[in-house]
Length: 312
Image 1 (cartoon, rainbow, N blue to C red):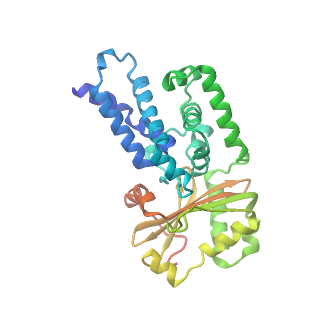
Image 2: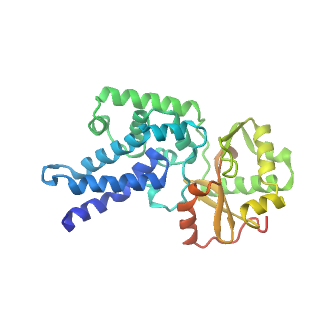
Image 3: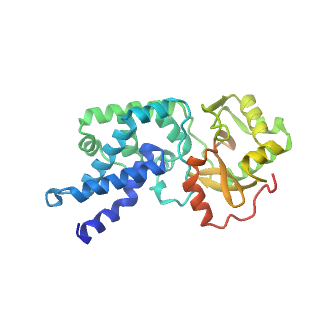
């Protein structure tokens, strides 16, 4: 392959990776899909490709759909033990974030909700909401009619909206203050204050420190508060499991405030928060080692600053 063709592909690699991550919810799988797209590009008769960007988008999207439809992926994702891979803000795979829809589409809360959509609905939702493709363009990418694209988009938006109450999204500084107050209440035993910081429709999901065979899900302020109090209570057993005393840092993960737990400079867990109207609307806790590799790599390249909790 000539250098011009390689340069042409590399110019769009970041966009393809961001698209694949939104479709698959896994940075590792997204990288594999992009590499497979490159191999297809390498083998293609590029003289006959009129619009390389459209061709690459079509190939990458359909490779992701093949992964989502595979028997192994269906088994893993319906087994109740799957969560998206969290990414530290600044990761180029998070992709476009100019509009509210683009920022929302990559949050852990929405990526988790997208699991409830069919592969085709998910693809249309991502292409439309995150990348602003027209229905005509989506139809060409997915080999469907414009009418089918519109129907998939409508169903996807309806399903996502049914699980989310928009409005009052906090700016980063305000959201951080809410999480700081929430963390202080969670670690001090002030359960009443903890409950008061949760929305009426709050939800929480966790992989059980990476040990649970199925995801742990909680609804109602009281149940979520109880789960959080137990999770943020330090014990010798938890320190042994984590490999030592934890330092907890505030950061941003997938565009939302998060608490990142670190032992010896290595990330061992992350809890991402969604803040709405000055309260916590959802929490997503991930500690499975295989889900934290890319976040940990990014963490090593930054100055973590002073932890909000040290020696936990």
